[in-house]
Structures are given as structure tokens and as C-alpha cells.
Image (cartoon, rainbow, N blue to C red; front, side):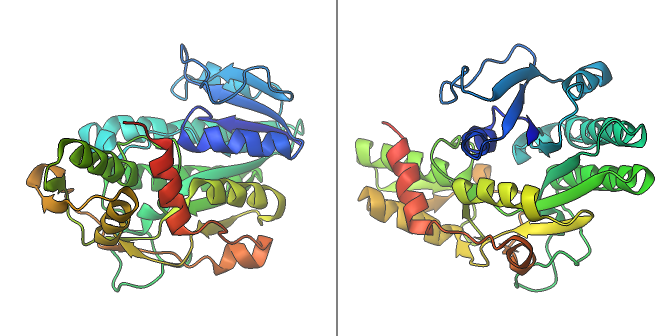
Length: 316
């Protein structure tokens, strides 16, 4: 299959590309104009081609679709919640408007009879919002985002759905729950905890600064997540939303303690105002029965193994 992966230089893309290539697909990967190829991805890998993509530029979007891919995995996004809060307009421009441009051009190609591609739109479980009870979220719940990032991703879903209704574009939506793994930036909570705990061990300090440790999250390993995306390309039903989740919740306090145990650190958490997020979701755990029924996918990597691999991938 000829597959276009947008945002391929990001954390998830760096794990998805090798998987798709191992499965025998011909892959075109996109990066931002002027951006280099990650060292972890061989630029001469068989079946891998690189293209530049600027989602704000309709001509750039059209150019990456000239090869008429059979499937598009749309990862490209402003993925940092902190960056989205600093500039909500940019989040909407990249996440919602950029997706609208990509989906519309794909739909036009289909309407013209040139191709019939699948668009796998990678969204986020944060679109569900707070919810009315601490229980696993289901795809048929009404989204109620409470952050610029989540609202812009829901906007991307709405834009793609409109194109699908108008043109018949084959659309599959993946709402992914939080994921981590080796190589993730320490802008995100798990590697950030590991980095701060390492520093505490090295400096011999008794405390580590954190934000609120009460929220509960359904953490997945990025390697399981990319396996889910591959499974959805093969078995996802068009027009359907799928949670990519484990169904198991871990409080951030539990994550902190597990990492401290792995690293052999006795420092305790010190909650400080500058690390507390406004409107943080208290509980975000997903029901993955729909994707399991459609594709047979379920997570295979234990949470403890994921934490160990995150720690092992970091260096002092």
C-alpha cells in the first residue's frame, strides 16, 4: 500500500515509519519546510520517501498528494497543550484548518475519480473533556473539550467528517489516549518526571517539583499505539471513531512513585503552582472494546516495561 504519513518527524511518526516499512508498505513521510530527517530514521530506507509539508499552504498540501496515496495517516499537529494555550489561534490553524485543507483535497481527488484513499485522522481522547463520572470513556459520548488543544482537534474531526459526507472520502478517526515511550520529549509528563528524578538523585536533593498528581490517565506505550494505527488501516470501518486505549488508569502520583522506584530515588514530590495546569482533566481512561472487536488490537507492552524503557532511553 502507498501510505502518506504527515508529521512523520514527531515522536509517534518516528515509531510508525519503521513499522509500516517492515510491513512492506511504500511510505511517503512529511516534515516541516527546512526541517531535517531524525537521526533515528534512515534517510535511505527502502520504500521511504520524504516530502516537505506546510499545512497552512494549500499548494504544499496539494503537492504531497500528487502521488495519490492509497492511505494517509494524519499525525501532523500542534501537539503540545502548553503551546496551544499560549496561542490558541495557531492551534486551530494547524490542527483544524490544516486538516480541513488536507481532507478537502483528498475528497476532491476521490470525487474526480482519480483515487479512493483512506484518511486515518489521529485525534485525541482529550476531546471528551471532564465527563460526569470517573469511568472509561466511550466513542458515542458527546465531546466537551476544555482546552485549546482538544477543541482544535475536535475541529479537525468536524472538518474531516464534513468532507467525508460531501465527497465520500473514507475517513477513520483514532482518539488516542495518553502515550509515552523511549525518545519522548521531556515536555511530556512521564519523561519529565524521569528527568527530574534523575536530577534529584544526582544532586542529592530530597524533593522533586511537580504539578497536580491526582489526575488519572490511561497511559499507552507508543509502540502499541502505532500498532493500533496499522490495524485501523487494515480493519477500521469508514466513518467510525475508535478509542486507542488500554482501559487501565494510573494516577500521576502512581507514575511518579513507580519511576522513583525504577531509578532508586527516595525524593518526594513537591507540588508547585507553576507546574499546575488549569482545567486539567481529573480522569481520562478509555474503553477500547470497539477497536478490539474491529481489528483484534489490544496493548501488549506492560506499563512497567514502558516506564523502564523511558528511563533507559534517557541519559544524564
